Length: 110
Image (cartoon, rainbow, N blue to C red; front, side, top):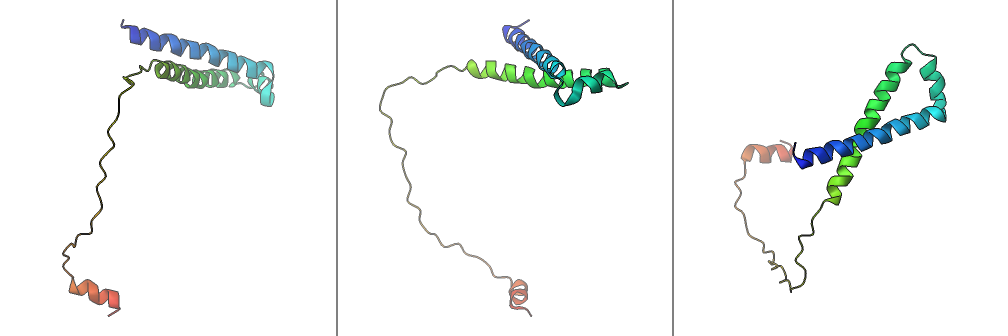
């Protein structure tokens, strides 16, 4: 398996660990009475699985994005004098246009 695939999977798993910790903290601190809702509902386990999966996707994507952004190479060679960009003066040019008599009459309200 290529190194970049291993790196992406590793950081996606890091995001998953953060997601599980986040959902666990939500349950532990009973945010929005979530613990009661999960334990006293017939679909509580399903809701917990869905919430964990969606947090996993979110935090995993953030972790992979952070890692990829940190890989940036500095391509700037540094030093040297840069030439200024040439500036072209705008110049008005006439553009021939054919007048449509039907539209001209409509514009006048006839």
